[in-house]
Amino acid sequence: MKPWEAKPEWCESDLYFDFSQARQVIKLDDQVAAAGLTHLLKGGVDFVVEWDTQLWLLEIKDPESGAIPEQHREKQRQRFLADIVSQSLIERHLFPKLRDSLIFLGLEYGVVNKPLRYITLIGLSDLEPAQLAGLRDRLWRTEWVSGPRYSGWRKSFDVQAFNVDQWNRLMTKCPILRISQQ
Image 1 (cartoon, rainbow, N blue to C red):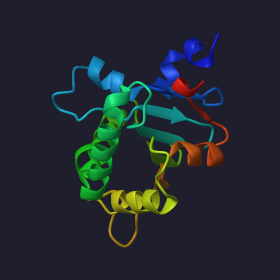
Image 2: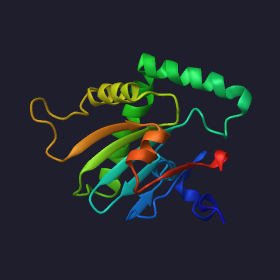
Image 3: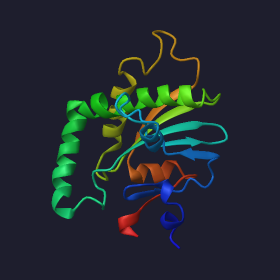
Image 4: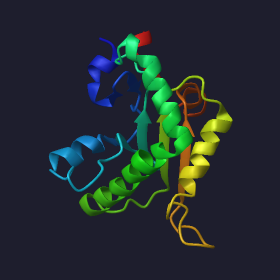
């Protein structure tokens, strides 16, 4: 049996995440929907992953997904790149998902006493590290994300952005497989 067949809850579209070393994994989008709150909240991040020493809020955007019909993939990719440039990716998707996930998690589960990382995985293979760093920096400067002026948050908090190749190079305890390429 293939790993994504054994653990379909660890998949997001065409990507399988090996969360086997995590303490807990929650598909937050599904929980927000099940709670009937999608009319009030933008939704949750795709995954909340608790490790021994950290809590990840993981949002996945995958315009190269093998689940997108081939004839639509390039158009989807171009639209996504335009959203990055115009900052609508941050304003309409990434920031609202972070805000609403923190609200839902805080009220439903309480605040975990661990460093928090908001990680955006962008499934575009040709994004350069500088482009991802720019995306991360723009998200960090959005509204209250960086914390109170002059001091930041007391809780350890960081924002990161990766593509699949970078993720697999840097996040070795949680590799990703693109199912359509297996």
